Length: 307
Ligand code: PSU
Ligand code: MN
Image 1: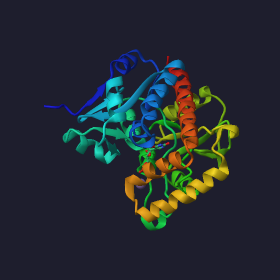
Image 2: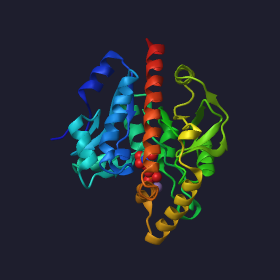
Image 3: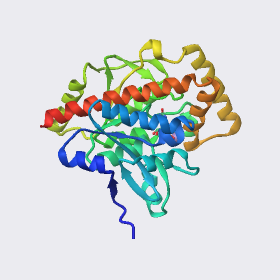
Image 4: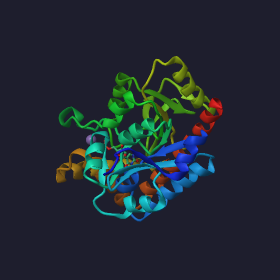
């Protein structure tokens, strides 16, 4: 009989016991966001980046119905290479566990599981958000609503530029999710350094983010997420003209092929990777590695505040 709890990888279990810094990582980018065979190599590099900055990586996912915080290399390999890995949001977790599924966790599911496991910092590429045409399709990522009620800091490069960024920022405000720019007052657009919107706050160092987390705990008045928006330097972003062309083509293909629901995000990301002949993939990888490094330094600073 399965026990349906969270299982911890040995490295993460030790770190939790000793109060050492841990960074949660998602598996949907590995199974559904990045093309094979780069996905597995990148997944390992993300973990190594977290280690190099002094924290323990906890990649979260489900293997044969077992929800794991801290996948080992064999489990990570399975989620990166096997066909039929489900994309798991929060609502899918229990069904997937009870049916013995293999699954990759989205930002929403990873945040919820990480917070349940007592992990306070999470690194990803870009959040889900409000899709263009959402007024007709109602397609808004549950990432937003989950962050409204999940106390975790998520380091990301804003939301993917394939989304309606302005509407996403409005929803984050309504939902009470804190948003700070890392050394910027402009909200980043994932592949692009600047999505064209101002932010109210910027933070200047990992220590300052740790101070925000401590203030939230002490105030006890806010129990949602904190988005730390970490833009790419302008000389590392995707060429904006190439970006705009690729996005227009991708949205047209989406309509032509009738892609809807949770297939939309993987479809558009795959379109970018093939249409830009790998340029968007290189940018995507840079984003994730930079976010993993910053998240680790925040986790280290937060652990130092606590000891
Ligand atoms: N950002 C990326 N690549 C991804 C995703 C985000 O750079 O693959 C994934 C995340 O797991 C996020 C999900 O939670 O896409 C959002 O999917 P949806 O739009 O269906 O909610
Ligand atoms: Mn959606």
